[in-house]
Image (cartoon, rainbow, N blue to C red; front, side, top):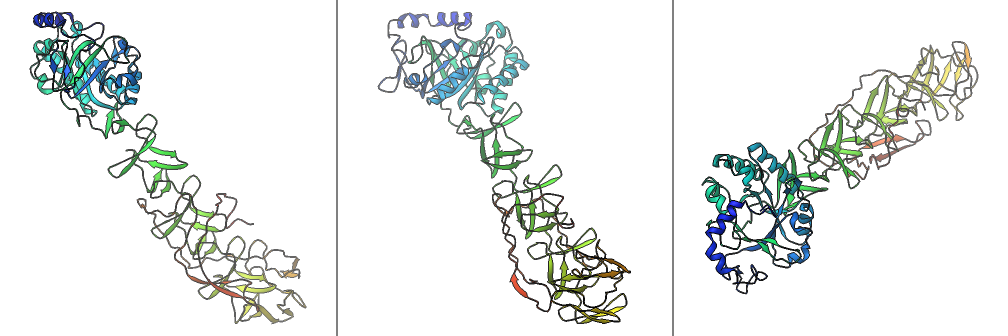
Length: 584
């Protein structure tokens, strides 16, 4: 098949001698232009004028010697398959890619062959790798043939050596999911090969213009001088005797050169998702399975080390991510096993404080959103049923508490709505009781507002919130608070340890109490989709009835009872300079 070099000379001479009478008698039997054409009864007209029956399909084998082929014309001239040469003496056959691409585009089924010069198994393995690296990018549905006929390199090898070379090549081709066959002429089959070779491998026999003597070939290369439309000059004509259906799997994975490729209907799949055995994979531009993070369709996905797309929790480089049921990485709120989590724009699970654009939330070390009382550092905060941090007055368990604008729970004396209140060490507001401040007693009424006489100190809570008559003596070690050291009484003058100062900021102190935090453990294998990654809308399905203060617990106390409906979406803030505990 080594075109323009023909067969080895000895084989050609022997074949001519063996068939001399037939060849002479047949020379004038058929016009060469009409030989090998299909007849009305479905048989093919042979060179000697006889009919060839039992043909499944007619094809050709080509290489660089045919030059540029018009495959549109060739495909219409009863060419159903082509065996394409892969390697010339100096390397890649220069017409391989053009022939493979254009033949396939015109509906011609593809096979391939390599003219071997291997003299040992190492060289045979390299020849197999060379072929596989070429054919992997094309829809090969016909065999890959190993052309054994080079007398200069292989003519002196023993049958055992040839068998080892053939086995090495064919085993690699078969392992990649292709169908290996052997190309040889009658002489090599009868005299060079071990008798087991035709039993182990299908044979593509070569004998020109004369019917082959080998009894059971799968294909016959009948002539090197056939005429086919779209090809200038001569071309080899081939007749297929046996079906190759199912010999090469149409849809399968192939391992070539240590990489995995996927084929669907023989076509290599590239830049696309593949669903196989209930698992999703993504194949890149080279057709190989990708791993790690990929971006496609404006979404991100994670593929494990075997290329399988992951869903649910994903741990990568010490960070947690969440992929929804479609595999897309989620940002914003995620609900998993009745717990809420927050994912940043880069997909990483957030812990600690987060602002989603509307409210502050606190996420435990497991990432789970907290509710109720939490302690962060030395300060206490309260998160309602939706997880949102509360500020101002808020009732918990029938008791009133006050959180400043940063969310910190205050203790001690505070000023709110023009009135003074006292918050116990655990933060709850005192009411209907006497309050002693540095030895002076005041009365906290039902609304919690302080009033009353204490020696020469008169405290009267009025609508304006101003202290009437005398000063208020409150030791700063008694009225615990923040950096400003004393409660505010509007613009009234408060005397603290006989030092006069004008306060402008409500202050508080924190206390450690027996409040506890709940903890949760994040499940890394969950596949439940909490939210679509294109939406950051959290819907808290666990509503509870809570009483929240609108104007504070004064004499004009106003309360409202409403269901906690949860977070309704929005952006988030990942800025360490903001959040609860940072003075506004």
